[in-house]
Amino acid sequence: MAGPTTQQEPLKTQQKCIAIFALLCCFAVVVALIFSSVDIWGDDEDGITEDNCSRDCSIVLVENIPDDLFLPTDGRPHLPLAAGFHTLLDKAKHSVEVVSPVWALNPWDLDTTPSSAKQGQLLFQRLLGLKSRGVKLKIASSLTNSAELKTLAAHNAEVHFVNMTAFTSGGLHSSFWIVDRRHIYIGSADMDWRSLSKRKELGVVVYNCSCLALDLHRVFSFYWQLHERDYIPSIWSKRVTALYGRHDALELQLNASEATAYVSTSPELFCARDRTRDVDAIYQVIQSAKTFIFISVTDYLPLLSRSFRGTSVTRYWSPIDEMIREAVVLKGVRVRLLISFWKKTHPLTFNFVTSLKSLCMQLPNCSVEVRFFSHKEKEDDIQHGLNHNKYMVTDNAVYIGNHDWVGSDFAINTGVGLVVKMKNSLEGRGVLEHFKAAFERDWRSRYAKSLQGNKDQLRSRNLHRVKMNLQPEEEKERNEPLSL
Ligand SMILES: *[C@@H]1O[C@H](CO)[C@@H](O)[C@H](O)[C@H]1NC(C)=O
Ligand SMILES: *[C@@H]1O[C@H](CO)[C@@H](O)[C@H](O)[C@H]1NC(C)=O
Ligand SMILES: *[C@@H]1O[C@H](CO)[C@@H](O)[C@H](O)[C@H]1NC(C)=O
Ligand SMILES: *[C@@H]1O[C@H](CO)[C@@H](O)[C@H](O)[C@H]1NC(C)=O
Ligand SMILES: *[C@@H]1O[C@H](CO)[C@@H](O)[C@H](O)[C@H]1NC(C)=O
Image (cartoon, rainbow, N blue to C red):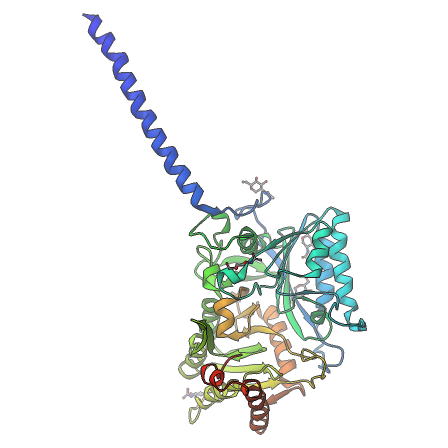
């Protein structure tokens, strides 16, 4: 009686085993397939997680004001940019991660070293010296042939090359630092000696803020993983997914005031899952402004130039222009736009800002003001005294980015932005007041000139330049009348 069942049971078990084994095999194959397509793993996060990272942060505005610009101080303590970088290096215990569009802390291109390059050289020496303190230096860059990166790499810096030609034909123009996954820098300055002397720069250093640093590090991790790749995979590890964004910003304390913050990036191709695009971040800040929006950028140009089948095609790029128009006309928000006037100012800039200004014609409580910041250019250096700022401050928030407000920049170059929104506008005014004061100081300075009167003169000067450039080829002029 027991015979058949005992014989059948091992058979059944055997069949079950085979079935389970087959299933396991299938599973393993599927897992292997999934994991082989996860190309971007993300870096180790040093044990800090979003649950136990620090949200009690302090924010410091850092600026570089060239010696020969006479800008009245407003009596506020304000940290020079170079001092900000040195403080960050003083604090570094484990790692310094840097992304910069340019590496020219030493004036390699000049025969004689100007005294103004001293700060840059000093910073370079300190970066070289990190090795002796046991601090790791990691750099992501799209530069192929930089003498400085080679020197740093020879001194133990790890340099990862991101081939932007393969992705968007743009550049890795992001400019930020992450120190020990605790402190960060984001701003207009890059690793160019001019940023520490001749150019007017503005940025922020945020201390003791591992939550924000962790999120910015994910952007860094993304670049890091693109090392010697020529495509962006469609599946990434969770370690490059954004932690915070415009719909779920990080809640934190900034200088003891309640605030929210997040990091945005561009171009779209470089936005990992959940990452807010720069343009959307700018939109959110403009949209939430109630009384004023002050914008300071080197260039403002709602145009997008793309090369298409060998010819350059330029199109109107409306997003930011539209947002400003809506805020001004429909919400009565006062807008001030401070743009640099320099050799590279595109002549159509004047047409676009004139168009913005004309919106307010015959409208009560409507105000758009535009001024051009211009410092006498020295013949040998068009960047001398250049207002290189890229930020916006409103009654309740500030946006600090890497890009000028030019369509092409957002479309092909990488950049990051930091959005900080103060929850209680009264309490948070202290922090915002710093940015506002910096803006108003520049706005009221002798270098900021309004459009009236100067316009035609400025315009014809730059139009003339453009024509000169295009003259040799009639054909070219027709195809790319707007090339930058
Ligand atoms: C944070 O949490 C992780 C995992 O829960 C742990 O490994 C790590 O040590 C913690 N870090 C700190 C700084 O508390
Ligand atoms: C970058 O990518 C482009 C296009 O894929 C390729 O032609 C070029 O050789 C790459 N450059 C480097 C330095 O790898
Ligand atoms: C950061 O935190 C440490 C201790 O956690 C404190 O000693 C230091 O003063 C803080 N730094 C800033 C800039 O707030
Ligand atoms: C313009 O502003 C003034 C004072 O701020 C206000 O009293 C008035 O109603 C506003 N007019 C319009 C048309 O919004
Ligand atoms: C935040 O606090 C620090 C010192 O704790 C101060 O140096 C800095 O100026 C403050 N930042 C702002 C924007 O108020």
